Length: 442
Ligand SMILES: [Zn+2]
Image 1 (cartoon, rainbow, N blue to C red):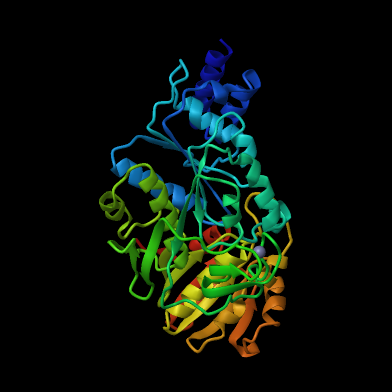
Image 2 (cartoon, helix red, strand yellow):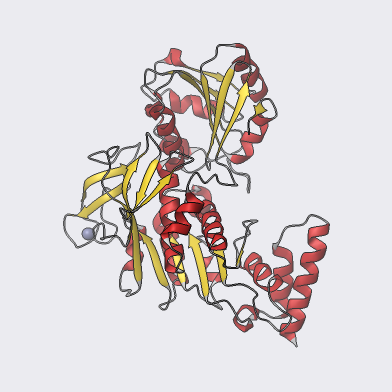
């Protein structure tokens, strides 16, 4: 009876919530009050895939859903991104019969790193994808090892882990476990011999704390790592990007499947790899996967093009408080080799909570912008002075960067001055302020 009532309340709550434009966590919250263990009483699908990690969760989940649907499977997933237990409860119950049977072949969950253990208290994923663990949202997440400890209790012994072999920290989740599959990228032309960036989170082994060395590095501290003391090293991969040509946007999976990349970023490659691994585990063929992923443009578009006066512009969106995401976007700008100006906007640190904490700006490798084709950098938004302070410690000559606090004024100046390409590096919430002043393409 309690089960029926919880499902009924959740379905009704969701129906009303949708009409009045409310989020998706309230109905689940109400259902959990009526029946706290409701999630253990529902009959779930054969495959329950969870995706967590610092970067790439939303994109990976979106691609997994698109591939599985193209394969003819029914997928239920938290498209609105409400990834704590209340949102997951709403998702499960609104897609169940009143008798408590979920109507789907696959339940796919984007899971918050910090709250995964709570979400999976009453049921556990059959496959758990962990994309990576990086410095991310310092005021909320502390350091990556803290997030590691938060995820660990969410990993049921029966769950198969799909892990990134190139990330030294999230690789540790394999310790003491039998059921692990690895995805990773082989050596490629754009690799570096040693880690790069403003800091080095791969300097010491996360298992024994001895120094680590790298055979090659794809970006920051992600690559073929080896501990100099213990056995921690990049594992042989089950799902592999065997070749990557970022300049021409071509990725080869397991030597046989060629993918044309819509977005030529190494980030995109890892998200594709994670989605590829998860879908292959669900029995999808390479043929279906390549058909969907070829030229795939993400719905939550982290890259968007626009025009501003005489300029063609590209918005590169990443999370604030996440230096590796920024580094990846800056590396994209430097790889283009065409004359350009770069606008960097930090207007709000987070869209979810208030913090004025800007230490993460010091973790970003802004020195990447010190190259001949980057003609000018403009710093804008409420935190432009924090950016300016950071820039005064880079190798960029002082005449190559300037400050314009007002985003509208920065856009007006750029519209009237020159025609070089324009790259805008910012986060989702700040980009909307700029988009009001430009003409969107596509
Ligand atoms: Zn070690």
